[in-house]
Amino acid sequence: MDFNFRRGKTKEIVKTPVILTVFISLNIMAHLVAGAVNEAVSFSVKLTVNSVLASYFLFQLKRAQRIDDLTQLLTIKEFLRRLDRDLAIKDNLCVVSIDMLLFRNINFSYGYEKGDQILAQLASRMKSFLSKTEYATRSYGDKFYLLLNRDDKELTTSIKELSRILNHPYLLNDNKFYIRTRVAYCYYTEEKSVEELILKASLAMSSFKESDNFNIQQYESWMQKERREQVKIIERLYKAVEESRFDVYFQPILNIKDKEIVALEALVRWFDPILGTVPPDKFINIAEELELISQIGEIVQRKVFEIKRRWKDENFKYMNMKVFINLSPIELREKSLVNRLEKIDPVLQSQIGFEITEDYFIESSNEWRTTLNMIKNLDICLSLDDFGTRYSSFEYLKDLPIDYLKLDRTFILNIDDNKNYNIVKFVISMCHSLGIKVIAEGVEHENIYKTLKELECDFVQGYYFHKPMSIENIEKL
Ligand code: C2E
Ligand code: MG
Ligand code: MG
Image 1 (cartoon, rainbow, N blue to C red):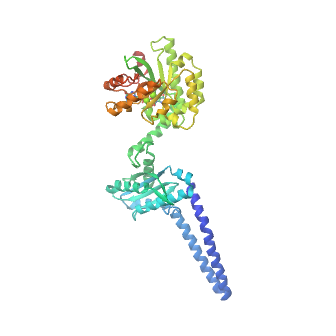
Image 2: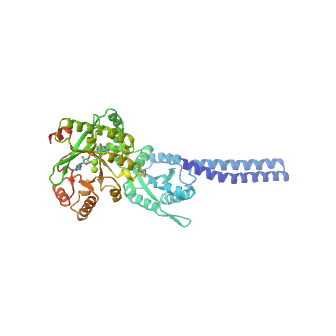
């Protein structure tokens, strides 16, 4: 909103002196005429001038309510008014939402004026794309909405064309600016409400994933379903944390040579009385965003420590087995983690490990280095999880105090493919030369196991051997 406010003001400040100058000159002229002719004529001239100016101001005011000063597109208020009118009388309507990626970088690097000029160019390209019955608005900053009135058969082609037009480089004083836009849209079906259409187009916009390479997204019903599900998860998650309603399952990690179980990975489980079983992939991210993850992590760690202590007391066969616990980047930022770990028995410390992902290190802060070193000083080992899914930067392998690397399932799934085979071979041999042991996760078939064995991978984990199990089932193994 601040963008509109700032821009509106600038233009008005420029316009006002011009209008005042015209106003004053016309009044002076009226007085001169008054001297030469008579009072009555002068009065009528003044009255005419004043009423012309009043109508001009009124016209400007009304126009400002309908037209955005910077882009010459409709104001959001006018856009919504027309959309409401058209919904009642027209078919084939489609609301398009447009976002500009990293546009603020242009503002920050070249100043707001250049940014404004690009926005104005973008708006003029939109206008050239629109037909007579279509219109557009800038809702705020670099966010736009368009109303298209086209047959659904030509819609996909039209949207692609719009995206192409908007992504074409922008020229300002012989400098080329490259802007990437995202286009999301919702085609009118049975919705007769402005709110519903705008909401769905916006929902499609916010459903772009960070990793998406595509810049066009149509609204689909799963988006709303997913959001509703998330709302329910959020509601129940607070309660689950409050009541410590989490359990821990364990999945065996095996020595590749003799298939002997040598370690376990602890995986959180949430059985909610209303939602049923909620898989970690559905709630871990949410818990991170809500900053509930540290409390969940603490529950998991407490349960693991309790089991390990009990096994030791009972002299159980797995009493010395290493247990890997997944750690979220947020937990690493908190001092309470190291404080808690420092308090546990040194033997127990040496029998646990943490699985961390590359997400920790992409953040600019270097605090995690200190925390990781503190953890390592307690003789707790570290494993780099999900290698092969994100950036998989080799720099981390050199830099991080890790003992294990976990090759992600997606990485080894197509190991039959020659290229994949060679990559896995290379990663394993490089890890070995750095003193890092390799665990392959998600091994589902014997042929993958055999290939990994041939490549001298150290450990394996996956459904082919064991699924994650409750503690009771682990104890029966
Ligand atoms: P992860 O740490 O990479 O764990 C491996 C995931 O792959 C587990 O899913 C496991 O059940 C699954 N898996 C194991 N073998 C196979 C296989 O052969 N095939 C297939 N398709 N899947 C296999 P799960 O338990 O659903 O956990 C998902 C993710 O949630 C974990 O991925 C981890 O990132 C996160 N997570 C789980 N527990 C915790 C926790 O206590 N704390 C934190 N911060 N994250 C956790
Ligand atoms: Mg893991
Ligand atoms: Mg993993």
